[in-house]
Amino acid sequence: MPELPEVETVVRTLEHQIHNQKIENVIVRYPKMIDCSPATFKKKLVGQHFRRFDRRGKYLLFYLDDILLVVHLRMEGKFFIQKKEEPINKHIHVVFQLNGKNELRYQDTRKFGRMELLPLNTDLKTFHELGPEPFEEEFNASYIKNFIKGKSCPVKSLLLDQSFVAGIGNIYADEILFACRIRPGRSVKRLTYKDCENIVFYTRDILIKAIQAGGTTIRSYTSSLGVTGRFQLSCQVHAQKFCGTCGNEIHVKWIGGRSSYYCPKCQEK
Image (tube, rainbow, N blue to C red):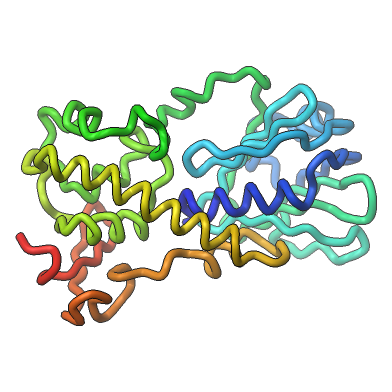
């Protein structure tokens, strides 16, 4: 699943490609993907322009003239910008016909992605019960200590909890904990204030580096899946066989149904 850096890269790439373009028609081929009827979805979007692009957690935010289009890619959702004459494959479920020669097409083989329309002035602070963004001042060591009071879940589960902090997924959670020298299975009740400071610092450090890698490397936009696979941070432990620091064999532990990679030497108990 695309995480914060990949979603940010997709948003900024689309901003470069379709900024100020007009939606001339909308074709919904899988109605369950949208939050209203296809007729209503089309009526509200036709004639709108893509004015501003943003992100909240893992959600893509498209600010149009007088409505907000929110997209969650989920597992395999991705956008394609293609010529209108190009064939539409069976996995394309929503098509935005733009002024000019191109179409913005949404493809999702599993059909897990979702789109919803909201008022422009929607307060996204508590949108879908998301926690603060990693780069907001609110996300600090004191916030973490207060959030984990009375809790005993593994710290890996904490990082994946979108109500705790928005945008972190399985890959970057492993990398953050490796940088902090914390094992993913450690109970949050054992986190010191210094641990919390490290979590804040390395969360921002790793995500910024990942975003910068996507922003400086990208040439042309094909799909969010391509962005996801091409611009992830070079991992030290996640999906690795050996530690990028000490060379020790990486261990894998299942926590909350997710694979968690760690180095037993660098991340001592």
